[in-house]
Every structure is written in structure tokens, then in C-alpha cells.
Image 1 (cartoon, protein in one colour):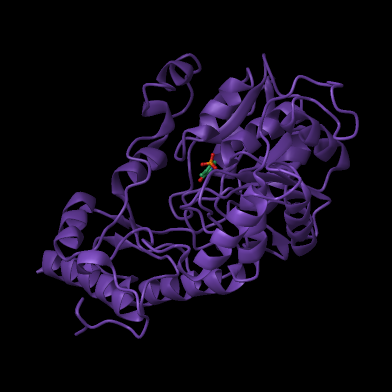
Image 2 (cartoon, rainbow, N blue to C red):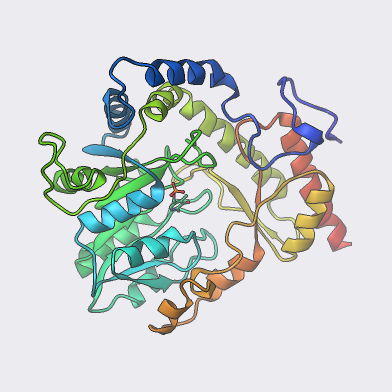
Length: 391
Ligand SMILES: *Cc1c(COP(=O)(O)O)cnc(C)c1O
């Protein structure tokens, strides 16, 4: 069968013959462009480094591609969450239902806005917030639902839209990892009052630095987010502060570079989807393993994540076989020291699926720089472990 020495046709191989979890050569094809933009913008006569024409054009390109009302580039995905919560008027006295399994900003952004995160359990198949569980946690103080798309699967947005309408709640879609995904014909980010993307290096439209964007179909929300992003100014009258804002501005060099890279995004996402389909085809049904739900509708192959009964043994086996893997969230959010007091102050039903998945998930490399031979090697290494364990 295929081994690590059996490389595909691409010129670049992983250093030390390991299969890296993140590409070591992410901007390989765009290096000359990056250097040129750095030089041109860095030495340009107008010395405009933030929120200039490049940012505006980048926002316009994303907006056109999505069919959004507005896209507002900002300093990170985390900042985008904060801008949205603030623009929607969520603050002290309010509760926001968030998934118990996920990244820290889901809880921290709510707390920084002065509101309280209420942790809901996840669906054990999609690993995203379970709408029925979320509904059971809605109370008189609940102001918003904030599901997050997770690894390769979008949350059940049609159900969350219905829930938000039924209970008169705001719907914030944490689509940080799902740029390019579409569910029932609606792009990730456009399901709720607002959504967001993260452009930090590791995300599927990552860049060499920090950045994010708020996306929305609501003009009023867009206007407020634009003001909040730059100290409450309206972009026309400098020095007039209409609302209490923050510094969440976007970098011109990054905007120009992302504009350049946008053309290749679809092809890179398709490569990820093909690798994921290969994994699922060859790993589904193996003993002790659960593969993510297959398909293309509502899928974003940011990360390919298995559930393994003997996760740590599988991880060790893969490491010995030269395959780097990642455990994203080893604890649920309410089990983290930062958020345990918040969770303890508002006891609710248990979170059995979130706790179980925190202990069983393992993510495999799925990035577009993997060669076919590397993909085959990862597949065979996982199969060998699952079948050996069985004997
Ligand atoms: C990465 C991520 C964020 C935060 O984005 P940053 O750009 O890293 O601040 C928020 N939510 C989810 C689900 C993420 O994966």
C-alpha cells in the first residue's frame, strides 16, 4: 500500500516526511504577490495602511460573491462576534444560548458584551448546537441564539431561524469556519441577523495575520457595525463619535492579498471536500470510529473530525506513523476554569453529548496542500489502527 515515501506529483513535500496538520507552505503560490503588495502599499505615496481602497474592494468582492447587504472587514473573528453582539444591543441582563462544545470566543464574546452565555448541548452527529436542547434553555432573559458551525458541518440553521422567530430572539450565526459553505441554497453567514468569517491563518480562507468580517443582510446592523469598528465614527465625519466603538480596523496589505487569493478559494475548498470524501469513503463503518456526516449541502471542510472510542491511542498511533492530528476542544466550555463560575451560577440540564465529544474527537489533516499520497497514507494509518484494535 502507499507509504510516506510515495509522494504525489506536487513538488513540495512535508519536512521530515511527516504529514503536517497545517500546511507549512500556505502562501507558496502567492509569495511574489505578497512581497509586491507589501512593497507597493508599504511605500505608497498615500501611506494608507488601514480601511482604505483595498479594504473597501475586498468587502465589495465578498458582498457580491455572497449576495449580502454588507460585509464589514474587521480585526478578527472574535472581534466580529463582539461587534455583532453590541450592534444588536445585547448587554447586561441578557442571556445568549451558545454551544457547550466549541471555541472560547463563543462564551467570552458574550461575557465581554456584558451578557451571560447559557451553554446548550450538541447534536452527537453534527457536533453543532442541538436546537431542541437550545430551546429548552430559553428563558425570560434570553435575547439571542448563537449556534456555531463546527469542523465540517453547518448547524441546523432552518430550525434555529424557526426558533428565533417563535421566541422573538436574535439569531447570530457563528460561521467563522464556514466561509464558502451553502445550506439549502443560503450561504453560511446569511442565515441570521448577522454572521462572520475569520481569516486567521488556520481557517479555510486564512491569511498571514489576524482578520475577520461581519456579514449581514440587515442595513441597520451593518451601519452600526461599521461605526463600532472604528471608534464609533461614521466614516464620513472624522472626529465625531456616534456610539462607543472599538478599534477593529482592517489592514490594507492583507485586504489586497485576500482580494488576490479570493479567486482560488473555491478550488481550494473543493480540494478539501475531495480529501474529506476520500476519508469518509474509506473510514466509515470501521470499528470504534464515527466519521462526519457526508455530503456537500451545509458542509465546509475546514477540518475533518472523527470520533474515536480510543482517541488518545489513535492519536499516538497516527503520530508514530508520521501523521499530525489535532484535538480542538479537550474540555467543554463550562468545564474551562474561565467559564465554570458562569455555568455554575445558572445550573441547567446536563451536557452529555458535549462532554463525550470533547473526549472522543480527533481531527485529521485536510488542507489543500496535501498530496494524494499523503491523503492515502493518513487513510491507511487510521484503517490500520481501527482494524488492529479489533483483532
Ligand atoms: C476561529 C473561530 C472564531 C474566532 O476567530 P478569530 O479570527 O480567531 O478571532 C470564532 N468562532 C469560531 C467557531 C471559530 O472557529
